[in-house]
Image (cartoon, rainbow, N blue to C red; front, top):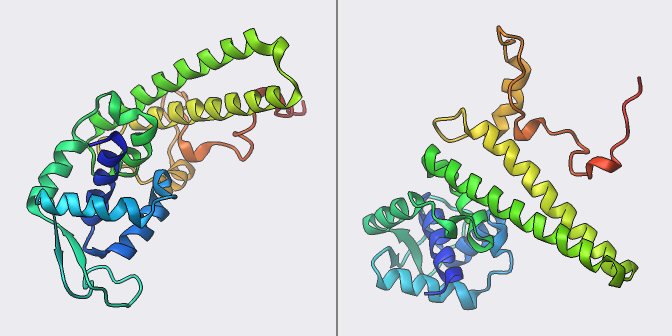
Length: 230
């Protein structure tokens, strides 16, 4: 099974742990919640569903969706996760090897952090940060060596690529700072409210930044941010 097929299988199990779904609704949920599968087609989804069914990780039955009705329509087949599927999902979510922070898998693993233990989450985040920091250094070096051979468009494309990776590294560092003090799954929507009501620390020190604390212009490169007026 290819890496992308394994990631797709994980994404399917992650969605079905929340309740049964028709194939069409499952596809919509994957599109909505997992950017890695925004181009997912029926040609790749249904072979994955068939494989998971043959392995006993999900079950396909006739009838309407009772647990999570999204469209009010009846469908021919409803997919449900089995107990073996739940065990396989739990086993996979407990792993934190290099495959967990690769480009193909990281978005899916992050989307399933709500059912991943804190230590595993942190290992995946730190692995991803290291991977992206190494990629950033390589791109900077490559851009520097090839600068004289770049025309204006190639140079702009290279700059854009660097800025994307820089923003991801900054975001990862912010999430890691937050995760280091967290036991359970994070509610990122509540972090902003917590920050507003947080009591000052006795030593006067400031806590590490949180993802929701980033200013509106945080995605800009540091050199392009306006200076504060004195």
